[in-house]
Image (tube, rainbow, N blue to C red; front, top):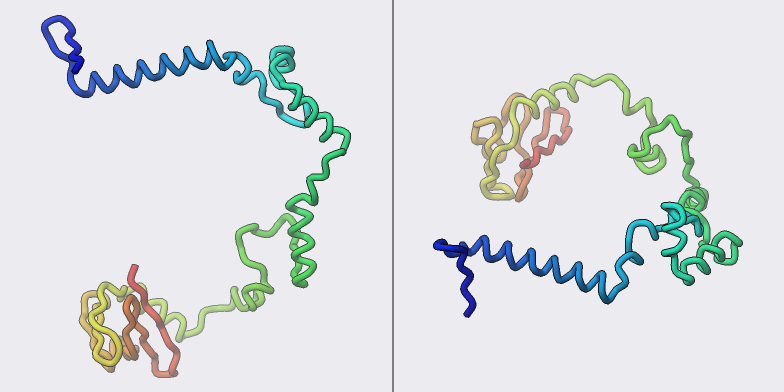
Length: 195
């Protein structure tokens, strides 16, 4: 076993590990410079486009012959890379009879054809039942679920409610593993889920 001493104080385990990592890094630099040619893998050899070197003459000198051949083939159009992603998406949309909207739409909102509703429905004024359901959800978040089915109980807003009991006009209909379904007087279901 080798022990490293630095004067009167012995190196700690953390200092030994740091010294080993430093030694490995130094070995990697020596191997790169001595056996792998050093400058060939430098940042000057990267190409930005079809055969265009980055970094002036240093990049052009470092570029390999295989890279030059590939760059020339791309520049001459000898290599067919196929349709672009935009072309593939347009073709897919045309096949599914979907409409690609203009640049003013949100790229992350689903298409009307996918959602199955029109914009007027999404912006329709809130009905009285919807307002009551929204207020119930805001005031009474689902905090816990105990049991499932007809014998289930839930904690909504700090109050324990069993199946069949009514809270603020909503009756607990049934309980699942991580959710509870309430029904209002009109038969509309309201599902609360655990966060």
